[in-house]
Length: 448
Image 1 (tube, rainbow, N blue to C red):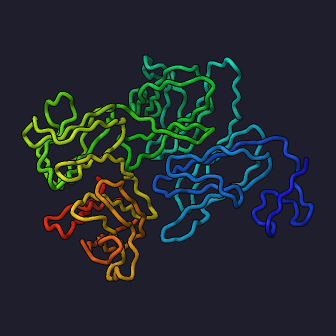
Image 2: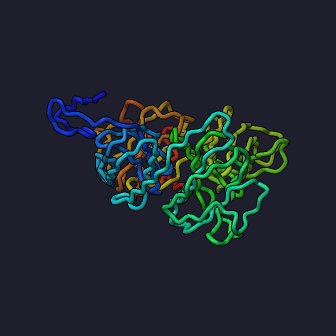
Image 3: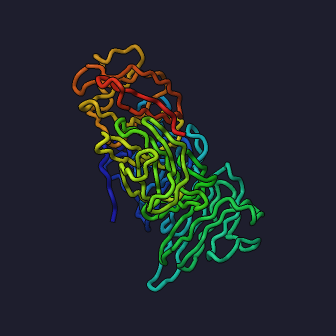
C-alpha cells in the first residue's frame, strides 16, 4: 500500500520524494521507536520534534514518551526558549535512518545554546509468556561525578571488585542485561574503588517482563545527596527518583499566622520533645531532617504542651525538601505543605508568591518595571487569598516593583517593593499580615 500526505506548500513533510501530485513514500518494512531525555541541568523545557512536528517536551531529568515511526530517514530537531526570546530557537538537529524493531534514545546534554546529542540504540525487547526476567540498562550523564562503577545485586551482597555490572564514563550507557525479577540494591562507587560509595539505593522490588533504565544526572537544588538517579520506563517515558536513604527528607517551617502567637512544633505521637521551639510570627526555620513515612505534625502554644493549636499528618519521602506554612486566623489555623522547585534555570529567574494575608478580601498582585504606573498595567495574579496554592512566574533578568491592590481596583495595599533579579535566581515573596490592618507586607527571601 502506498501512502500520501497533503501538505500546504509541501512544507513539514517527513520524506516526500517530490513536491507534486503523486509524490509518494517508499514502502516501510516496519517501525522503530524514538524518545528523548533532557540532561542539561540548568535548561528550560526542551521541545523534541520529528522534522517540523513536535512529538514531546522534556524538563530536566525527564523523557518524552516513546513514539513509533516507519523505518525511513528523518531529521529530529530540538528547540528551547533562550534568554530574552519570545519564541523557541532550534538548538540542535540529528538525522538518523530508523531501523525497524530498534529503539533510539536521544540524550540532550552540555551547553543549551550548542548542546551535544547522544543517540543510544538497542533492539526492541519482546518477552514471552512465562518469562521471569526483566531488562535493565544503566546510563551516566553526570560529568561532575567522573567515572563510576555500577553494582546491582541482592541486598545481602556487598559491592566488591569483580562483581560490578560495569564501569561508566559520563555520556555512556551499558549494554542491556536480563535479570531475574526480585529485590535489588543499586550501588554506585568511584571507578575501581568498590569501597568508595557514592550512592546506595533503598531496596527495589522489580517485576518480570518489563524494561527499565537507570540514569545518573548532575544534582540540582531539589536534591538532598551528591548523586541524582532516575528510573525510566522507556515505553511510557515516565520517570521517578531513586534516592539514597542516607539522606532523609527535610522540612522547613514558616510561621505566617499573626494571631497564633509563638509555637512549639512536634513530629512525634505521643508528644515528647519539640523539633522546633518558640517560633513566632514570620519565623523561618532552617531545613530540619525528619523521618521518611507518615509524619504527625503538631503545633502547641510555646512551652505549653497541653495547648494543641493544630494537628496534621504528612507523608514524607526520602530525598525531598518540603516547606510547611501555618497560616490563617488564630481560631482556625491551617497548615500548607509544599514541595517548591528549587532548581536554577539559566534562561530566567523563577519567582514564587506565597499569599498568607488575612486582613483583606482578595488582592491582586502586580509585577512591573520600576517607575511604571500600575494604572497602565494589568495584574500578574488576580484574587489572591490566604491558603491558596503558591503561584510561580518566570521573569527576565531586571528590576521589578511589586504591588498589591484591592481586587479589580488600583487601590494600593502594599508596595512598591523592589526586587532585582538575575538569570538563575530562585526567589520567593511571602505576603504577610501587617500590624496596620489596612496594609500588607511583602517579604522576599531566597530558597535556601
